[in-house]
Image (tube, rainbow, N blue to C red; front, side):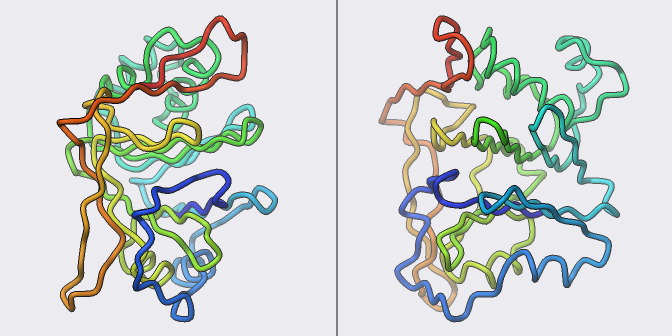
Length: 242
């Protein structure tokens, strides 16, 4: 699973960029993924974003609706309960649910986003792109059962991938694991859905040769924050993002 977003869509923390980054050694992430996955397909949204997906894997699902696109990794143990709660049919899969939950947050916002994500049981990670709103929503479960990495490519684009070797060759040293129990939104930035009132702090990281890599991010238990998820609809119904 691969997603590439221009930097105006995903404003990654500056600490993700390594001072040791060598752009000349980078490979194009989309080309590398397609060359190494003969069953994969890809599509792009103009010059803003690209998705690539290996359809042969049962642990990766893709759905789209109303110009909202979602790639989902892993699985939800309580999917049937969630589908019933959000008015979806029993046949709705995980990315269908994520799209509906996102639309509910965006358009009606009855619950804060972190409360919705806390209800998800299982090992999961997902990447959602709202084409009309030009927003990106990423989340990774807290149990560590699914891995995601994010990095900065040579042109400044943000690469999100579940393959360590490919993202390392595409982003040199400017990459790190996406933090578990966290979410990212274009407007709200990176935050923990387990500890939504705390800020995230960068932790310096070096490889086995002592070269500085992109920083990891953890919850800062001593620092508080409040963030909001902007909506498309009525100003009277803003959803609480944090």
